[in-house]
Image 1 (tube, one colour):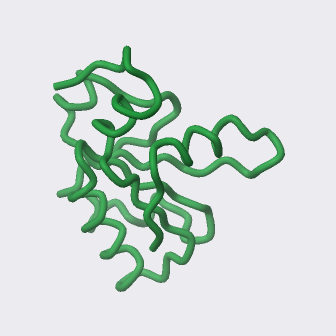
Image 2 (cartoon, rainbow, N blue to C red):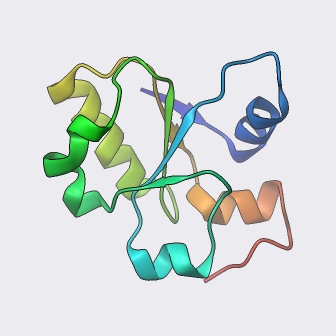
Length: 108
C-alpha cells in the first residue's frame, strides 16, 4: 500500500491518459452524506470483511476516510489478507482534500 496525498489524487483524477482508480470510501453513511468525492464506491469500514468480494483486487484502489486512519486500516486488511496489490491510502482523508485541493469542500 502506498500513501497518496490529496494533491496527487487530484492530479491523477484530472489525468485522462491514466486509468482512473476506484475510490473506496469507508466512512459511515452519515459522514458521506456530509461530503463526498464524486464517483466514490461507499462501503463502510465495518462491512469490508463481508463485502470485499465486490472489489476487484487488480483495479487500482484509493481508500478514503475522514483523516486517513480508518482507510489505512482497511487498505492494510485488503493488502495482507486478500491479495490486493494496487492500493493507495488517501493520507489525511477528505479533511486533506478540503485543505489542499478544494477549500469549498464541506468539512465536519
